[in-house]
Image (cartoon, rainbow, N blue to C red; front, side, top):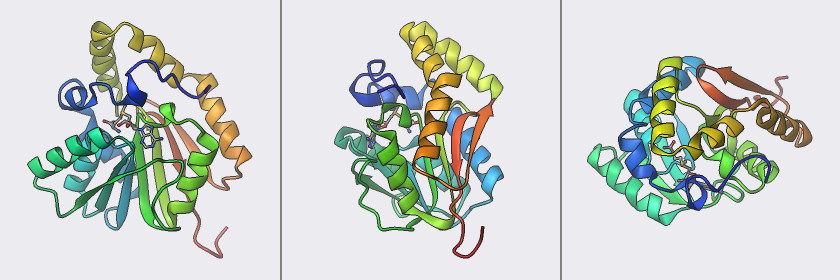
Length: 219
Ligand code: SAM
C-alpha cells in the first residue's frame, strides 16, 4: 500500500488514539469542525465520520451544528471508547456508532449530507474501493472532507512538535502522508474512479479531499 504507512500507530491507526485524542490532539477537533462548517455551510442532515476512532471529531461537529452523526469505525475497541465519550458529552441522541469497513459500508446510496474523516484514509487497504463506496453513500448536494491534518498552522506546529517528542518515527509517517507524492496517489485514484467533481485542499488546514456530488440534472 503506497498510500499510507500502517506500522506507525499499531493496528491500522487505533494505537493509543483515545489517549492522544484527549490530550495532544484535543484542541484540533473544534478547529477542524469550524473549518468544515465555514467551508460548506452544512449544518443539518446526516453526517458520517469514517474511521472516527474515539469520536472526537464527531463530538466537535455535533456540538457546533444540528447534524446527526454516525461515528463509523471498524474497530470494536474504538467503538466502545467512542460510546463512552459520546455519553460523557451528553450527545447519545445525536451521535450513533456503527462498526464496519470503509470498503463496504452498511449505508444505502445517497445517505449522507456530509462525510468526514480525519487521519484514517492513510490506513485504508484499497483507496479506489473506499472512495467508490464513499461516493455511493454521499447524497447529491453533499460534500466530503476526508484527509489528515491539525486544523491550522499554529496547531500543526505545536502538535507535530509534541508528537515527534513522544515518537520520533511519527515525523516520517506524517511527512509521507502529507507529501506531494501521496497527494498525487490520491489524485490519480480520484481520476481513475472518475469522480466528476473534487478538490484537494492543502495548506495550513492539512490535506483534505473535498468531493461534491452534484444534484441530478446539474453539471
Ligand atoms: N478520526 C479519529 C481522530 O482523528 O481522532 C481517529 C483516527 S485513527 C489515527 C484512525 C482510525 O481509522 C482508527 O480508529 C481505525 O480503526 C480506523 N480505520 C482504519 N482503517 C479503517 C477501515 N478500513 N474502515 C473503518 N475504519 C478504519
